[in-house]
Every structure is written in C-alpha cells, then in structure tokens.
Length: 80
Image (spheres, rainbow, N blue to C red):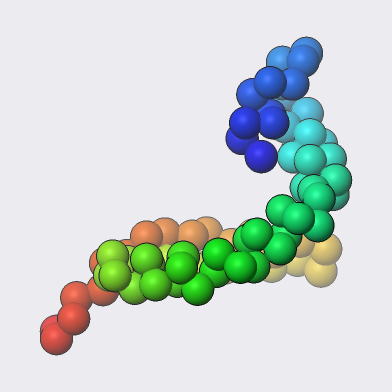
C-alpha cells in the first residue's frame, strides 16, 4: 500500500485525502494479494515468536461506529 501511495499524483494534501486513498487501494486489492497474505501468515507468526516481540493492543476509544486501537511493541522475556 505504501508504494502505491507514494506514486499517486497529485500528492496527498491532508489526512482526509490519505484516508480516502488508503481505502481506495484497500478495497481494490486483488484476490491474489489476499491469498499471498494468508499463505504467508505461518511464516510471519513464526518470525514474531522468534523475535520474542508481541504487539499489545490497547483500546483507547470505543464508539458504536469506530474503535481506536493503540498498538505497541513489547518484548517477551522468557523465563521471567
């Protein structure tokens, strides 16, 4: 998605423009992309486990139409 955003013209002017373009790219992804992402998940999970890093999700705002989730990286210390 980042590559597609960087090559688009005219340049992104504001956060609303960024959101619209991200949604447009997301909704027009090819099924081949989805299949590749699903197929790569076991490898990605294994890499996270090897790195001993976890994403910690903290809900910072929950409304009927939108939930905002803050993701932070944390280090797992084995044996502690």
